Image (tube, rainbow, N blue to C red):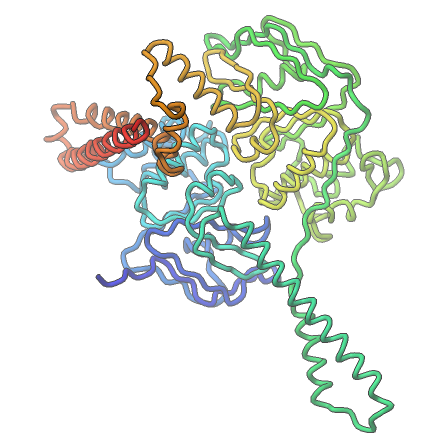
Amino acid sequence: MAARPPLLQLNDISLTFGGDPIFSDLSLVVQPGDRVALVGRNGSGKSTLMKVMAGLVEADSGARTLAPAASVGYMEQDPDMAGFATLGDFAASQLDPSEAYRVEMAGEGLKFDPARAVETASGGERRRAALAKLMAEAPELMLLDEPTNHLDIEAIAWLETTLKETRSAFVLISHDRAFLRELTRATLWIDRGMVRRQEKGFTHFEEWRDKVWEDEDQARHKLNRKIKSEARWAVEGISARRKRNQGRVRALQELRAERSSQITRQGTAAMALDSGPKSGKKVIEAVGISKAYGDKVLLTDFSIRIQRGDRVALVGPNGVGKTTLLNMLMGTEAPDSGTVTLGTNLLPAIFDQSRAQLDPDMTLWDSLTGDPDMRVSGKADQILVRGMPRHVIGYLKEFLFDEAQARAPVRSLSGGEKARLLLAKLMARESNILVLDEPTNDLDIETLDLLQELLDDYDGTIILVSHDRDFLDRVAATTIAMEGDGRATVYAGGWTDYRSQRKSTAEWADAGRKPAAKPKSGGSAKKEKSSALSFTERHRLEELPDVIARLEAEIAKLEGLMADPELFTREPVKFRKATEALTQRQSALTDAETEWMTLEEKAGS
């Protein structure tokens, strides 16, 4: 069988913005079925490269080649919805009317209402509509730029499952390590205008990156030694020779030129946290608190004691009440019943996911010097950083901003740069309790690593809201799971610990309703089950119930659509496509159920 041609090729692409080169002589290939992580520092050009791949940004030179009749879809960060009344109208705008049901299915998974008016939709709802549009269209190549932002963990799980099952190729930009590890088989790494490719998924990225950098450092060290040796020869040999070896002198000049042309790696942000004076041992105590808005119950009879040094994470679907509980715990919102008592000597520092502390019309300079907590009396160019005066430019450079950006408006920053600026404001003040509401959105991998290390060393208390499973595992020691209907349960550990304990609780509940299976001789049933299945098989067995439930829901929706007796005569094309989709999902459901039974039998053998 002849090999299929690449879906997309970029050859010798060069691109310059405002005089600064973004890429030079860049080439890459995307093959059918590729599942690629696109990684790199904030500001390295990931989103720009993705727009070049999508054909939305034209390069200064080079060629973009798309396979004949191939379709490419790009998830817009800020979609233009002018002319559309509802989010559903926008999401279905490129679909045949007979396929509009795909938007409803994606809407259920991504938790957005297709009937929501565009003019009243939030930025997060607009992005979810753009993602639903792409998933419903299912092009041969999907380009996804931070698709998990504004999604809760349930929606991320839906998207993860859907992308696993798609036949489309896709390229992903994401800060969510767990998402990238689960989905990708190859990695494109943008580093100082160069794109490298490794035929391994994101799981192996950091090892590969560190090896590349280690090899670079060794090569640079050898070059420096050679230059030093040749320079010594050039100086010391003058008195011993009337005439220099001009070829050797030219070689020394070339070595120096080679060193000058090397692009140094950008350092990591020099972030630091100061926990300030200690708070009292008891930080927050909530007893029997409840909260409802009309008929919607957010919390019922919840109690918790948070002590100095605790790391507490709040998890749950969007809209379940995490931010409301956070506000009640911090004393900025009163519960309907119950009491919240704050400890003594609290110095809170708050990172809000809406970035409300940043005025988009202010410059970075004014954003820092105009903050009353950071202002130095009589000094227009200095700010207080943890009680010590610092020059504005010097402090901004620690967070990887250059001097030219200092006078630029905040609105000109990328999402990751806004997050870094907000961290700069937060970390300038002393604190002993950090409140972090979605701090990981838009941060690159290296900055996330540094933030996690700083939180590890922080002496104060941390209350965290996040949908980033990897970050929750790294930081949280206690998890409050809000699961709807007013239920909030406290678990020890991070996300993985919570899921494990929740699963065990469900299994214990099931065991109370069913006769216990008799273990075979030679060990426990649990031990035999884990040894009978490989890691991949165990993982697949755990995810199959969700796959089956999703297929059953889609079948029910399609059957409901086809229950209309007039559909065949009124819209024959829609009827035919719905019939094909129903047949495909019924077949997939049979396969999934068969696979589940096979793995269950193997696990119990």
